[in-house]
Length: 110
Image (cartoon, helix red, strand yellow):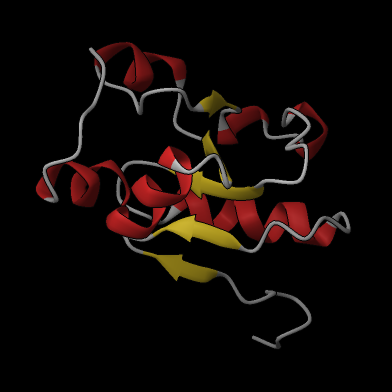
């Protein structure tokens, strides 16, 4: 796998993402499916499911850093690479997904 085919994706910890959200520096984009989000979601995240992923559906980040998130951190990497393939500079994801988010004691919505 060459770098060109799979652009690098930066891992962010739950704490880094929570701080970025609290400071208004990040836009969290949840790429899980609606049935997953109905059970439990990230507070305030934009939802763009990976199954029908189109980077154009991501809300205008208005200067914020876009960070992708999913359940475990696998789909968020795929979403970041897909966005980068379309020329967007969205190269960050929440490593470990909502599993790591909850393990860090951060809040979710049900």
